[in-house]
Length: 387
Ligand SMILES: *Cc1c(COP(=O)(O)O)cnc(C)c1O
Image (cartoon, rainbow, N blue to C red; front, top):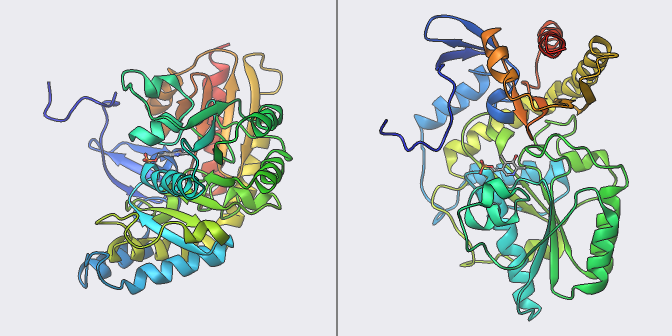
């Protein structure tokens, strides 16, 4: 037994340093990082400009609390609003917390409307975090088992299913919001039909519901646009994000627009660390680089990776589907394949399997073409050796 609570199944490897898309372990073995710490280190490891921003800020001022003005927080909020078309931002420290803020915002709206039990619609197969509210919102019983009682005020419907939303719109007077991932991340890189978000937008407009997008994983350039909803023509009322926002420094954000931006007022929500100068400096240095060509690069390389995988795995009957959006790339097999992760590790490549049978790549967005080709070849070889 170790002194760390055993909540994780860990691979027996520890990394001592990183540079760009590569990590190095204690024995000096190098690994190509096809996972970026689960969509976090989008600029790769030890990014010089992020490192400098962090170290300069640490030597100047780490934290003052939200009792006082924080100019870097204001600057970051303005930057995110300009990038997204949203009006204001609440800063916190993780993805789950950003969704907590969104869920509190929705409940507050319900309370204002004098609805006894305001209901938020979420999706089967979704993932929204591990706090009580976000695990209740999550559409995966593995995340919920053992934590009863869950919260009231949530209804789940199948993902990418417009009919079930329509029938709730007819029958449920207590709904205040839909919380949905533009692409299911942990749920297996499921990309919905092009008309899905526009339809949700329409229902929300008709019914006065909030459309709240969980872009914790899809945000910050991951899919080839700053936010994934920007592939469509719609604008949500609320967007949450976290993972890639500061390239590894913990930070989360809940963005809101229009009436939704006026719901969480002074005294209704708070966090000690949220949006402190260090995290904001790191986020600003990250965004500066992401928006300076890196996101466009990710869009291109992502397409090339999907094409490369389709070519290398053409005719392989183990493969159910190969899909991707930007640098969120997946090979879905007809069988469980969690063992692929360990085999890739032996080959010096980090990747991940989610939803049991989906090999998922979330590489740094500034991945080079040769490294993209290496990832494609490794994944293809590992799939082909199963046949
Ligand atoms: C990772 C993730 C979360 C939870 O983020 P944490 O920082 O682990 O709390 C929430 N939603 C989505 C879509 C995620 O991918």
